[in-house]
Image 1 (cartoon, rainbow, N blue to C red):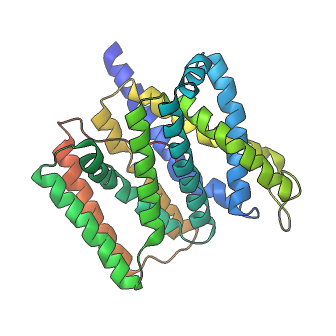
Image 2: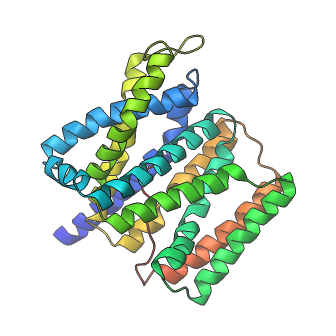
Length: 297
């Protein structure tokens, strides 16, 4: 009974993490009076403050200090910082410029991008189901490109930057709290510099968001990460990986039914191909434990 409750708690924590990431566009839209770079700057600074407290409470400071003393790890973290910074900025821009639907598409594509990167860089082997899944996802992206007569830059950039970020973090094997602490610390001077150039922490054209709304950006970033890590300790990694589709599914609903973005026939066909690929991929990996859950947006 204790084991069953433990597992159920893990499922609830994983679902909670991906639900919070799915609801993130609503929070970002509330900050829309600020330009994307200012929103990113606040997210970095308030996250750094909260992560420093968490690292102190859970005694992760020594691990972070050890990581920055190792040149290979530090260089890898510099690369991951650039990738996650780019991903966060692009996601904020997409949501607040009327492209939340395309942002959700990027995170539907992301698991299959992870598989492809694993083949290229980690020499992982693909079975026939995985090849079919990737082919269907590629067909969906190609269909969208043909329909809008241009490459779907936002979905591809989000999927590739987040996939590459996950690959770097997987290869160096640093813990999520100390890793994100170092990454936000690297970004912090740039964030402070940008806000100073803008005339202060709350500077924005027109009426900007309140200070408390800006402050919770740290909680919005770290809370789902902590839930994710709690879930990862309690349930199978493959089960956790399948929960990750909650996030982009919620984002899709928000984009269409709350933000009023048009869901065109070309979108439906493209999503249908990608979802079919995801179903095939999920079915093939259910008993193998090979699904790689996405980490924070």
